[in-house]
Length: 442
Image (cartoon, rainbow, N blue to C red; front, side, top):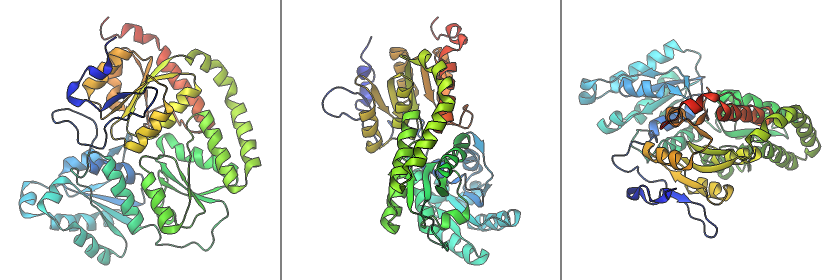
C-alpha cells in the first residue's frame, strides 16, 4: 500500500496520521488551495445553516436570486424565504429600494412572524448598500426586530464563519430581550442541535423523563419566546461543540450560565451524558432509571446487529459537527475508523478527534474529491459516512454509504433508540449485496 501522506505534495499538512507520541494535527482554518474544488461552502450558507429552522421569523436574502436558491435548502429540507432578486442594473445603481419593498411585502405575506432576518450576500456587500441602516429604519417602521445578518460569502474561509455570525446576531439582538416570571430548578437550553431527523424531540423527551425542562433548542426548535428568554435558565447543554461553542461561552460570560459538554450519539456517550446531567442537578436516581429502561428496550436489536459489525472499517467526512462523538459511537459498535475529516474543523475539533481515534488513523481537513478518492482506494473501508456530495463517490468504489447528518438518513440517530437506528443503517450499508457488482475497477 502506498503512503497516503505522500500522494499530494502540494497540500502537505492538511492530512496527518495519528502516531504514538506527540499530537500532530492537520493544518486547518485556512483558505482552500486555489484550483481545488472543495465543499466548504460560504459564510452566507453557514448563516442559513444556523438560522433556517427559525420558522417564526421572516428570512430576506438581499442579493441575486441564485443566492436565495442556494440558501433555500438546508439539511435536505426546503425553507421559505424572500429575495430581492437583484439584477445587473441593481448592482450598478444600488438595491436599497428593492430591499425596502421586499421587507414590506414579506411582512404583508407573513403578518404573524415575530422578527425578520436580512442576509447580506457577496454582491450587496461589494456595492455598499447600507443594510444596517435600512434594517434599523425598517425596524422603527414595522415595530419589531429587523436583524441584519452580515454574512457575505467571502467572509472567512468556510461556512463555519457564518455559524458564528448567525449566533452573534441572535445573541446581540434577541437573547435577553424578554423575561420569565420564574426559573425552574431544572430549566436548560440545548445548544448545537439542529433537529435533523426530529432529533430535538428525542432529546427533549429523554430529559423530560428526568424532570428537566428544555426551554430552548438552538436552533433546531427555538421559537421567539424561547430565544428572548434563553438567558433565564440554570444550565446550557452543549452538543455540537464546533458550531455551538461560541454561544455557550458567550452566555456563560454575559449571564453567568454554566454549560456542560454532552452528546447523545452512541450508547456509551448517551449513558455518560445522562449521568453527568443527573449528577449536576442531583437527579442521579432518575438518570439511572431511564438508562436501565431505555437500554433494555434496544438490547435485543443490538445483540443481533453488533456482532456482524465488529471489526468492520469505517471512514468519515462531513462538516465538523460531532466528529469525535460519531467516532465513539462507531467504537460502541466495535468498528475501526480508518480515516476521518471535515470541511471546516478547527484546532479544538481536531484535537478532540485525535484523542478519540486509534493510532494509525488518518485525519484530513478540507479534502478535495481527489483526496477522498485516494483515501477510499488506498484504505478500502467497509462503509463511508458523509454528506450527499460524497454519496456518488462512495458508490463508484462499491463501498456502502451512510448519509450523515441529513434529514434523509434513517434516523433519528440520537439517544438509545437512535443508536439502534444508526447501527441498523450501518449494517445495511455494509451488507447490501449490490456492492459486489458496483466496484469502480471490477
